[in-house]
Length: 159
Length: 245
Image (cartoon, rainbow over the protein chains, first blue to last red):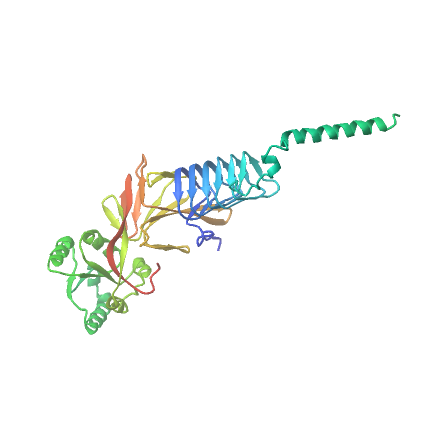
C-alpha cells in the first residue's frame, strides 16, 4: 500500500547507472551509455552518451560521444559530438566539443574549443600578400572613431 | 545418452505422481535413461565422475535451484550438457531458462536447444544466477580499475550472471557480471527504491569485518574477503524458447 518502487530509469538506453548512493573512484572506461546521479572521482570514458543528473558531481576528466550535463563537473570535458548544458549545469574545466548548447543559468569556467578548426574560412589574397595589415587596419579604425568623437564634442555647445 | 539425477527431497510421497508422469513422458519421447536417486549416504561427485567416464553426454537434474547449484559445482570441468526438470519450490533458475515445471519440461529436454552459458565464481564456489550482499559501507573493486563505494544505509547489492529483477534482464552469455545496487529511501510512509547498475568481469570484495554473501543457487552463505569473477561460456545447458535472455 505504501510501497512505491521506482523502476530502473532508462534501463533500455543505459548500460551503467550510477545512483545517488554510489561513489565511484578510479578509471571508469566503458563502451555503453552512462547515467550519473552520484559522485565520480577519477576518469570517465565512454564511446557512447553520458547523462549527468542535477545532483551529481564529477571530479574527473570526461570523454564521451555526446553529453547532457545538469550537474557539476570539475575537470576537462572532451565530447566528440554534442554537449548540452542545462540551466543547473556547472563545468569548471576546459571544454572541447563539436556542438555546444548552453542554457541560461549554466556556468562554464574554462577554455572552450568548438569544432575541429578546419571550418575556419581562408584569408583573402590581399591579407596573405601583406597588402593589408589586419592589426594596423584595426588601429586606424579605432583612431578614426576617436577623432569623430572629439569633433562631436567640440561641435556641441557648452552650457 | 541421458543420465537422470533425482534430488533426495523427491523421495517424499507428494512427488510420486509427478515423477511417474515425467518418466512416462520421457519414455514416450525416447529419451529415458539411467536414474540415480540422491541420498545423504551417496557421494554425488563420485557418481557423476564415474558416469562421465562411461560416456554420459547429458546429465538431467531433477529437482530445484539448490540441486542444480550442487551439480554445477561438480560438472564445471567435465564435457557434459546439463538439463533441468524443475519440481517443487525454489525454481527461479528454471523460470529464467524458460523451462516449465514438471512434465512439460520433458518436451524442452527433447527439443535440445543448447546454449553455452557463463558461470560466476566466488572463491571456490560456482554460481549460475546471482549473489546477494547486504551491508553498510561496502567497497567493491572492479576490473582492477575502479572502486564502487556505497554510502548510506539500506543498500542491497546483487551480483548477477542470470537474473531478471525489476525489469532488468541479465544475459548469461555476455561474458560479464552485472552489479545491481538497490538503495531503499524511506520518507514518512513511502519507500522508494533507486537502482544503480554496473558491469564488470572481475570483482574484489574486501572488508575488515567479514560480510555474509548469499548464493542464490545453493542458498549458501560465503564470508568475505571474496574474489568474484566470470568464466565465459563455461557450461552447456539445455534451455527453453521462453528464456529470459
